[in-house]
Each structure stands twice: as C-alpha cells, then as structure tokens.
Amino acid sequence: MHRDRLPVSALQTWADLNNVQRNGVAVSQTPNGKGLGLITIAKDLDNEAVLMTVPQNLVLSLDNVWISAKSDPQLKEVLDAVGDFSQTARGAILIFLLMQITHSALSGIDKIGVSNPLTEYIKFLPPEVPLPTFWSAQERTFAAGTSLKAALDSKLKSLDREFTNLRDATASIVWCQKHWWSADSGMLTFDDWKQVDAMYRSRALDLPGTGHAMVPCIDMANHASGDDTTALYDTDADGNAVLILREGKALKAGDEVSITYGDEKGACEMLFSYGFMENTMDSARELFLDLNIPDDDPLKLAKKAIANAAPGFKLFLKEGSIGWEGDFVWLVCVNEEDGLDFRLLQRIDGEKELKVFWKDDEILDVSDLGNLLEKERLRNVFQLRAIVFLQARVEQQLLALEESKLNIDSMESQIDTTTSFYQSIIRLRELEEKLMLQAYEDFEETELPWPRTGAQATTTGQQRTIHWYNLYDCVEHLGGEGKGNILAASLSAPNIPSPPKRFDEDYMSHQ
Image (cartoon, rainbow, N blue to C red; front, top):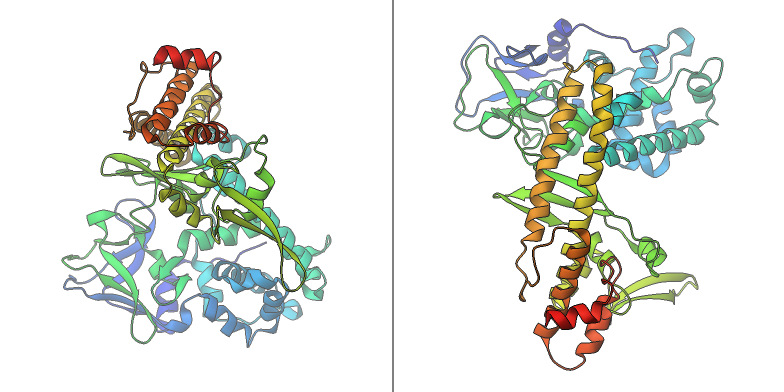
C-alpha cells in the first residue's frame, strides 16, 4: 500500500501545532552518522531538565486507540471484528496504524476513517525498518544455528497467521473488501502487515502508568546503554509522556539525546526487534533455545496440553557465569514414576478438564512445578536430569551453528559483506557461539552434591557412562529404604541419555 511521506524538516511544525513542548532539543541528523535522532540545540542542559513533554492524547496506547474509535466508526468496526486481538496494546495499535495508512492512501469519496494528528505523524516515520522479518530467503539462511532462526521463523508464521485472521474477520465488511481484499481494487498486502508490526516493535516504549505505547517525537531518540544513556522517559502527574535528562548528565549544543531500549536485552533480541546491535557489545548476554518433548515420552500429549510456559529455556551471563531459567525444563524432566500425574476430572457443568498434579498437589501453573521439586528428597536427581538435558541441547545447537558455517562460507561471494546486515549477523553468530561454549563448559563443571566420578568425558558414549555413574552415586548418597525403587524411577525419566551397554558390569567395575 502506498504510504505518503513528509520531510523531517516539517516535524517541528507538527510538534508545535500539537503542543509538544521541547526544551532545547530537536529531531535532526546525528553527528555520528546513525541517521535521525534527538539533538541538543541552542543551549546547555543539566540538572534533570525536562527535555520534552508529549500531551497524553498523542500517546498511541491501547486506551487511546479505543478513545479514537468512539469518533471513527470504521476503526471501531475493525477493532470489533478482530475480537480479542484488539484488546491487547499491540493488536489495537497495529490496527490503528493500518487504518491511518489506509486513510492516507485513499482520496475523494473513497476516503475512510477519520484524520487525526497521528495520521500525519506516521508520515514522518522511515519508509523501511531494517528488521529481520524483511530479510530475503538467502539472508535468513545466515541465521542458521543461532537463536534468531527459531525466533524469526516463529515470528513470520505468527504474522502470517495474524494477517490471515484479519482477512477472515473483515472480509464481510464492505469497505474492507473493496480497499483491502478485492483482487481488483484491494491494496493491502502481507508486506503492509509486516510494516506496521515493524513500526510498533522498533518504536514502542514501556511507558510507566500506560504500558506499551508509541510516543511521537520521544520515539525518535536513539539507543545507548549503560552510562552512555543520557535521558529517561516517564509519565508526569497529568498523564503526559516526558523525556528527562538523567541525574548527573549534562548536554551541550550538538550532543545527541539517547534513551535505552533495554540494557539487559541480548544481542539476538536487539537485532530481532530493532535491526542492530551496539558496536560495544562483546557478549550475546542471553539467548533462548527451544525444547521439544520427545515422541517417546508417554505423557507428551498431556504435557503439551497443560504447558503454559515458553517451550524452551534461557541462557544468560551473570557476573561472569552462565545461568539458566525455564519452567518448561522441569516438565520435560519428570514423569509419572516420579510423581507427575494427569487426571481428567469433571467440572460442575459436566465438561471434562485435564488437571495435572505433583503427587497430591495440583499444579495450577508450570512455574509451580520447579518449586515443588525443590522440596523433594530427590531434588538433586531432578537437578542432574535438567543439567544433562540442557547440556545436550546446547551441544546440539553448537553443532548446528558449526554445520551452517560451510553453507555461509559458500554464499559470502554472492553478497555484499560491507552491509549492516552482514556485519550484524556475523557478530551475532560469534557472540552466541561464545556464550554457548561457556554454557557447555559450565554445565560440565557443575558441582554436584555427590562425588563426580569417572574419567573426563571426551566422547558422547563416555559422557553417558559418566552421567549414569553419577546417578548411581546420587542414589548411594541418598541412602535409605526404597533405594532400588528410587533408582528405577530416576533411570526411567524421559530425555536422560540411554544407559551404556553392559551397564551393570560397568557399574560394578567402577565400584
């Protein structure tokens, strides 16, 4: 769909007309060549000065979209048609952006929707956002082996599903059929949907008191992390969005005003959501790896039915060491013999409902399972299972990254290696490999509450043998009655490496 554009030089006029108050700052080209940004002009600034105030009615939020719908019947028609999607900030804002672009693309008697200040503001936004969702098929190949690949594949599928749902929900609306979906006169394409998603994803702020929102003019500020961040965004007592100089910071004419998009965000998330990584980033910081419940797990269908946690785990770097978190891991690592129980119960309305229990405790959320396991006498066994499983998944990802290098090397001659795309994706591959190698080593050196036995593992078979030795040591360490049953339940857990051949002989000779 055609998008009208307005020159950035006209943005100052738009801001004045809409009561955006600016204190010595303006949108201009940045001195470091990053493109547009907020620049200090005319005077020096310090002492936590308020740099900009954006009226509450200009903040593009969930509430304000629905307020706009009260005077825009076409907007309300679409919001109502898409149902629950429009009850989320992202859903409502994407529909709003799409309506403004449609309004601007039509003329005369075909005009739909109601013009408002944000209709014009959208015309100042860049025509292209360099996010991975716009990469070509060849460019996406470079993400193989990184955590970005799964995130990007999932995002594209999600966008396609949303676009299909939008078409199905609005095809019966006469003007939508004519201007969006008709083979003869329809203008809306999947690329348009990716564009409004990119606008939102790359510019949305988590505004205190409001939630996720787009804030005109403040969203022109570029990112800087740590001590390089010069300003903070907030909400004042009147609900207006404000940009405030950080305590202890001072700016002189010509300096750039920067905000943080999230100091804690990893390299993958920065590239995924904003299309870039900081040049100073020397660590991937964190990454998410997906997990699958194996097909031979007898409880696979039941586990998938009740899983309300992200199907994977996050690795992160903290104080020089690797940590991990992921409630889904515990669901994969335990089974019926341990105490996991699924029951199909009848509700008072007669309908059947699947419930999950850990022994006699009902699990209302998967996050509760980890807390229950922590209280168990065999908590060390469950922790060992998790570590073994996570280490195997990290190894699998490292192998995928290594195997993809040959394909990438063969394609390098076909692309421009000086582009920001190439520089970013190669850096991501290097940083994630570094993080995963450290994770693998840290898992290998994890201190267990029982003696770590056997020679240092160098092959998969040796690693399996050592892990099974450790499991025997764990059971011996726990002692007490029922040790044989405990061992049997532990060894039957899903996803633990299979016992080596002649296991009994190996164990006895080890002793």
